[in-house]
Each structure stands twice: as structure tokens, then as C-alpha cells.
Image (cartoon, rainbow, N blue to C red; front, side, top):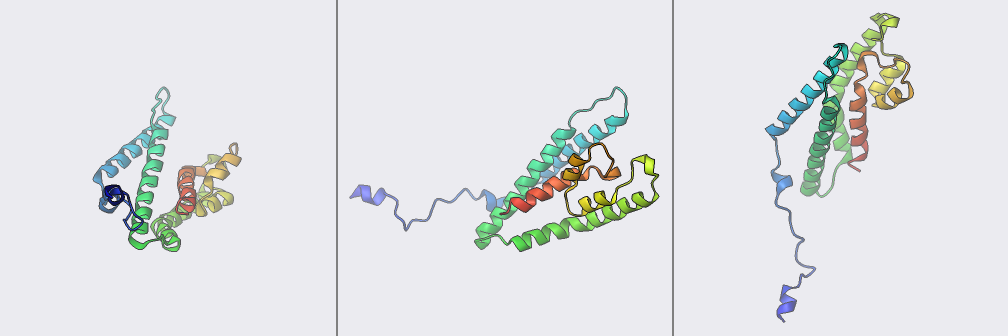
Length: 173
């Protein structure tokens, strides 16, 4: 009889985690990690024009951004699912657009200006295909397919934002 009392029944709720997802709010330490990632990327890019200076860490900084983004987005999705019982993809994508698109539009405006005013041979111009790739987050694919031709001009770094946004398209599903 004691064996039956100790056996789990279908009426018992499943074990609950320690509440990490519910209590994980703003974490200043993550801002610190972002700062380190930014410094790694900036020193890596600054070393390109310095003969003999070969700074490491740029790719590590990009990887750190990807991991942090994945963690933060997963935290938001899990919290929403636990609180509401589901995830609203419409709301998720609307929040992403409202958060990123004002700056993307500014970058598109500046990229358009460089396309019009930069000298064709300067390498600073963004082509119409590059502008389209920036607007719809496929710079990484344009970059891969046009390695020998300068398509993105000053905005080649948008490849990482494109990869992140493509991740956001798939991950919530």
C-alpha cells in the first residue's frame, strides 16, 4: 500500500523548475559582457589599417553577441509561454520590428547618401542590391555571393545583424 502512495499519479503536477525563468530580469552583468564583445569587435576592426597590429577577438565578440541574443530571446519566449500558455508570433515579430527598424531606416538613409555622393571607386558606396539586402536582412547571403564585388560599401557589417534576424525568424517557431 505504501508503494502506491509513493508512486506518482497523473493528478500530480509536473515538477517545476527553480523559478529561474520567472526571476531572470534585467542583468547588468550581461551589459558588461556586451561591452567586452564591443571592445573585441572594435579593436579587431581598428587593427585592419595598422601594419603589424593584429588584434584578436573580433570573431569572439560576434559569437558572444549571438549567444547573448539567443539567451535573451529564449528567456523572453519561455517567460511568455509560461505566463500565457503560448507565444504570440505576431507580437514577437512586431516587437522586433519596432525595436530595430527605426535604426535600420536611418542606416538605409545614410547608405543611400553614400551611394549617391561617394566616388564610385572609393568602395564606400552601397549598391541598390545592398540597400535591399539591408532592408530585408539578407546581407550575409549577398556578401557570400558577391565576395569580389563591393556591394555593401561601408555597411558590410550588417551581415551579422542579418544572421541574427534570420535566427529570430526560425527560433520562436
